[in-house]
Amino acid sequence: MKLKDLYYEKHRIRLKGKMDIEGLKKAGRVALATLDLVEAEIRPGLATEKINTLVHEFTIKNNATSAPLNYRGFPKSVCVSVNEVICHGIPGERVLKDGDIVNVDVTPILNGYYADVSKTFFVGNPGPDARKIMRVARESLKKGMSMVHPGNTVGDIGWAIQKYAEEEGCSVVREFVGHGVGFEFHEPPQVPHYGRKGKGIALVPGMVFTIEPMINLGKSHLRVLEDNWTAVTADGSLSAQFEQTVLVTENGFESLTPFDL
Ligand code: MF3
Ligand code: CO
Ligand code: CO
Image (tube, rainbow, N blue to C red; front, side):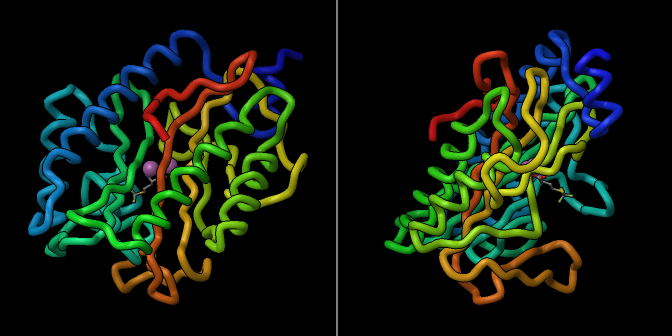
């Protein structure tokens, strides 16, 4: 049996071909340009609703649509997660203030291809806690990505992230994981940001998935607000996240949403 058919039969993972990769890279470029546009507007006093407007309009202008909008009832075009919000923050009346950190998570769909990417930004002048969680979250993604090559497993990615983040005295969120992506928003496999070396599905060329560790300054536990989306740290500590969509290649990996870490 072909590897492609085997991975679909066994794991329901759809490996991506040359054309798909081209399409995903184009979607990735729209996603990164969206984050650049938002970054330029981030300042104290900006309402998170404005970020939604920016993302929504820019996405449409680029002939794409926003995957989050109406996804399982999510009401907006982007997730905006401030400070103690881990992920799935709903843009609205909250106003950014000096010293905040804010994660902006975008997923445009362009010609049917989904690219999922997020960055956390400083608002104004960061304090020491904000600096620390940003540094650890960035480096966590980098550590995870460095494990991506054929022969390694999904468990190796989680293991590398967990080891690093916990050594730094931070914690890894368990309830949300990286995921296959490309033809749909969330595809198999799940990619936990914790785990054991050598466990889980073996990586093979053509796999496309996100790595998106959510790292807390305090404990890993979370609570979901009444809106049924907003996930916050149970202890109120800061949480930061960086996310890229990566392709497993013959020699290692290529990011389809590349930015410096
Ligand atoms: N972009 C998120 C992820 O990285 C998913 C957001 S789901 C939404 O997987 F509905 F909140 F948009
Ligand atoms: Co994702
Ligand atoms: Co995302």
